[in-house]
Every structure is written in C-alpha cells, then in structure tokens.
Image (cartoon, rainbow, N blue to C red):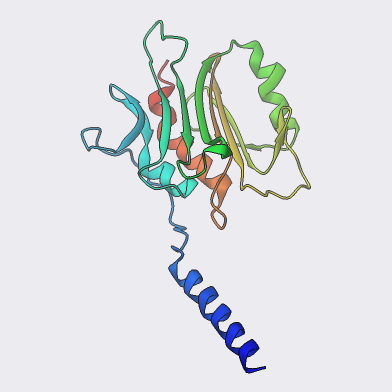
Length: 201
C-alpha cells in the first residue's frame, strides 16, 4: 500500500513538473505593421523587399525562429515557375508536412466564378475590404473541395484565407494552428499584413 501511494505521488509530481515546463500559449494578436526589412530574420521566404513576417508566422503556428521554410516571392513580369510560394515546416516533426502554406497565383477572371465564389457559398466568411477591387473569404476548420466543412471538429486548428483581385489570388492555408488562438483571426490578420505588398499588380 505504501509503495502504491509513493508511485502515485511520484507520477503526480512528474505530471505537475511537465505542465509547469510547458511554455504558455501566446494569445497576443499578430503584428499590425510590417517589420523593418533590414532587420535580420524579420522575414521568411524573402526575396528582395518581399517576404512573410517571421513573428506573425511564429505566433500563428507556435513554431520558433528555427522553423524550416521553403520558397520565395518574385513580383517581376516573368517569375520563375517555383516562385510565389512559401511553405513552413516544423523541424521537430518532418512527417507532419507543411504547417503553413502561402501562395500567389495568376488564375484568370473565370477563377472567381468557378472556384472563389463557391467558397463563400460553402459557408466561408466574407472579408472586409482590404484592397480596392479585391474580394476575400476566410474560415477556420477542416476544408474539403472548395470550402469549409461544417460540423466537424477542428482537430488541427486549421484556417484558410483567400483574396482575389484582377485574376490573381493570394491564398493562406494554416494547416496546423495553435490551440487556444483564434485561427481565423490569425489568417485574416496575416492577409492584412502581406496583401498590399504581394498584390501590387
């Protein structure tokens, strides 16, 4: 009996210590202004003066500054085929796949009716106006086909945001967000930050 109580006490102490050692979730909002481009490490997927603010990505994914990322953005008249994409990975869980994906693509005006509008019809939330002549949609939760899946648990804290203007779409896919944060608000806040720079055309 005494041995059993000792083991239970040890288990309780270990559990308590583990909980104390966990870093608390940062529930603060994403930055509302872009960082100074000259600051080392301020951006990921950067090329020239264009990139994704690293601090915003850290907050919405829960990853640290040593996150793994791939890609860059080229806003020139003839970007290479591999440009205009940013993929973020967790270096401690490579089998997880991408944690966050951001892509910019010229898709043509027919994309709005064929794909974009159907995301709204599926239950996505219309964005406030971020840029002139641009329309946006965002949501939190699992995604299938063209829009959100309602009624299913958001196990991975997923969220999506899409902004469409002049045949070009900027997409943010948060595949593994942070539990306890407002994941939909995070993708909308990131869109506010990066759209004015990435959707200049």
